[in-house]
Length: 157
Image (cartoon, rainbow, N blue to C red; front, side):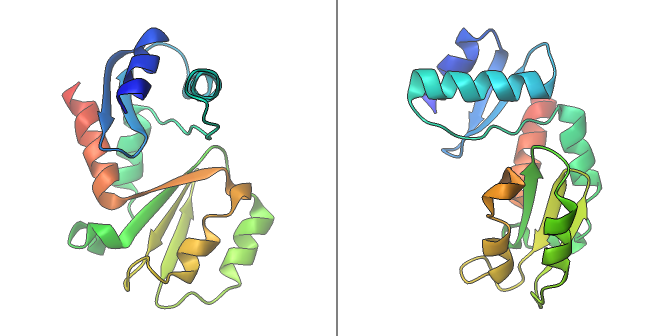
């Protein structure tokens, strides 16, 4: 994470902070989230030798993700909910395919560029969790604890 922080600072971003060893970065800078995604993906590959998709949200977009939470029970059991952050709108055919499957008691809601997933029995053997790892989504998932912590970090800086 120290290398990732240093790389972001080298690229001219300010107030760079990382959250645990998860690849999550909170920073300040100019430009669009899309520009940041492209710039960081390229720099991480070139400088750190790792090819990973980068998905970025502004502080206000992240606050909106928290506001739109369709599963209020996540506040009491945040490790049972994940949010998949997509790089773009999800493919309609992929979403239809997901909706046709029975994941009960698990549930999910597609909202904008996010997919909220409630895993009442945890993620260990989650069929829904496996379905949402599909590379076609261009997504990265974070549990509710991480989502709310990142927003708190963005509000601090």
